[in-house]
Length: 145
Image (cartoon, rainbow, N blue to C red; front, top):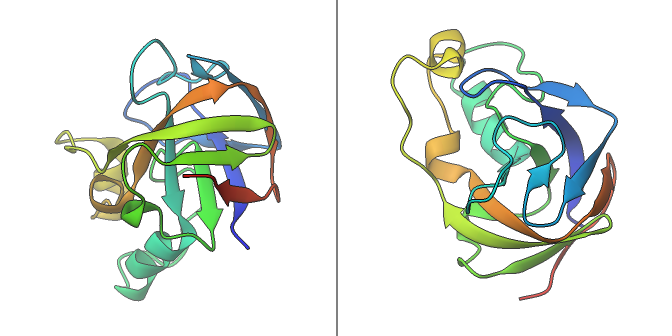
């Protein structure tokens, strides 16, 4: 079963996000009060714990906390970067659509400086919120296609 491991928020772009207990995701906007939310195709960023584990296995850093890769939602049990663009996901009360796989990483970001590598550009995905609602840690993630 795929599930939400963490929800993370930041007021500024390019910085590590801070974990929160639950998040309000707004239709056509993203996570309330997050710097990346807005009227565009990358409203919410997701990264799998499995991807974080790859960085840990490299010995780059000993302990990685949720939000260190600036992901809004840390997942477990789903290979996010293999989902085709257009895939719909039911996460908590929300409905989201995959809009982009990976991204170009901007140089000098806090994440790369702290960790030495960033898995988000390779394995992170982005979604647009089709139906808003609350997402909590432990919520199930369902692939609807």
